Length: 224
Image 1: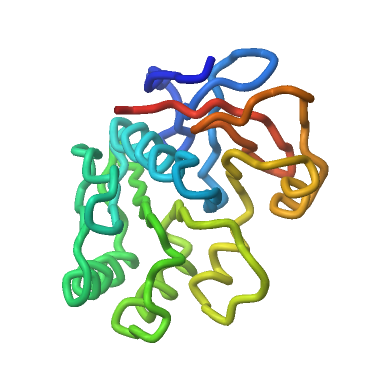
Image 2: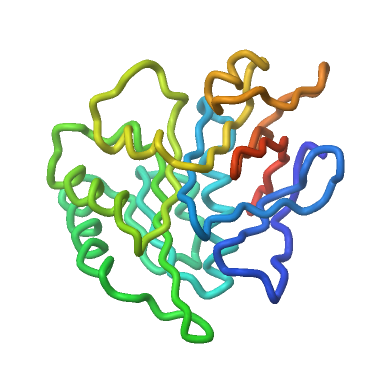
């Protein structure tokens, strides 16, 4: 289907295994495993990047995980009402938000059954000013923290970037690439041959999910 509503998460599922859409061919619910790997979401504007982040945020928050949202003003992530903390502002507000999260990074978040999880949703990471060290400094520390899982969305990588934030996002072990143009471009972005069906339309919210080097075409949910 071209649109999939937010799917129900199994009651016995792990908080960091959100159900994010339907898998190609089988039509079965697809889980993204964030337990041991961070996630980079890439794609052109209007490809559904923020929607994927919102789906993940609502799923993991409903399981009891802390969800921290950093996005641009007007981002659809404002609709993630389940978030623990959200910052959709710029300047000093972003710096204070990130510094607070850095201070918490060494502490265990509370969670059901005594097991806590904390997730940062970072939208439009490529639009952050590289020379604003009050923002990029704490963000670099967070992206390298073993006590935090993060999901970062941005445009397709184009050439080398000296930004430590961009480099950390590119090094993510799991990738979602939305609305790829063709198999060659998909191969360049995900680093492996992509499953591709001639004539399959790449509509908004559809793309490749690569986890543990296994690529799957997924129609991601629209939580709104």
